Amino acid sequence: MALTIPDHLSAIRGFIEKRYKTDQTFRDIYDDYLTYLDAHRFWSHKSMDVAPFRCREYAELVSELEKELIQMLKKGSDEEH
Image (cartoon, rainbow, N blue to C red; front, side, top):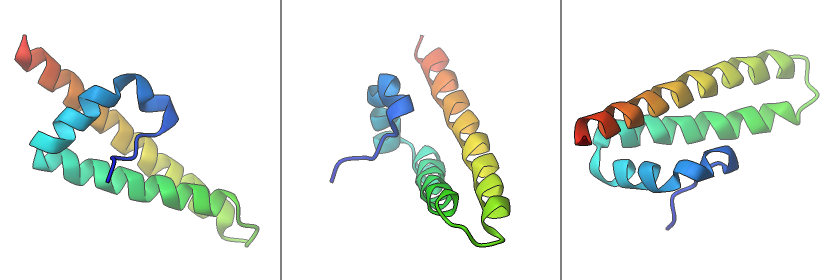
């Protein structure tokens, strides 16, 4: 099964795949990131009263985790040099 990489992160696909295979913490955070990304997509297409709140909530979680993942990748890259 191929790892899901959102289109906007495709430029760093190789780095994500390598880190995902070798770092359990990264893998756990990335899995959460994908779960929240799916939830954000789900709520962004709903019309229930709670949908805008849930959509914003998951957008914030996605953004926070994405920043954390990028920082982990940068730190790992710095350590390799």
